[in-house]
Length: 158
Image 1 (cartoon, rainbow, N blue to C red):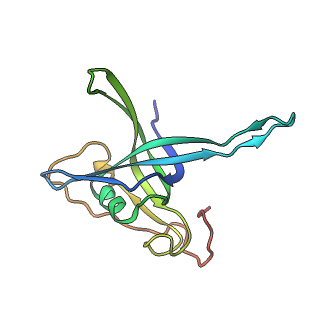
Image 2 (cartoon, one colour):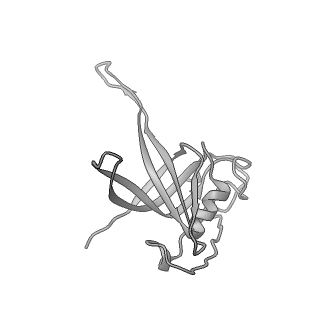
């Protein structure tokens, strides 16, 4: 048995890049930054913050939601799978890229920070369409408020 699951909480680094295909399906790419906070060790050594950048890929309906609600600086919760692909650059050198294919996305932040109602909004890719694009598949994404949408202005829903 094997598991390929990634959970990230971070901030979007730039506005999403949106592309539509002839069959109407969409794909969105954007960078997500996650930061481990720095600290001072017991001996006085300063360890600085460490930021990692992740390439996020959203397909079809989830891509349309990202296009509508995600922008630079948006705090997000992402669940997905790690995928690595290779390509040849302009000089013919083989390059590798690691991407996170999003299955679930939750908009985080305070009320008013994002246009979805409540403190957070959750969006999922339907199970039958989580991996590769398929022609003529039209899906609806559903927004839910998994934590009750209270009036508290918490940054995170947990």
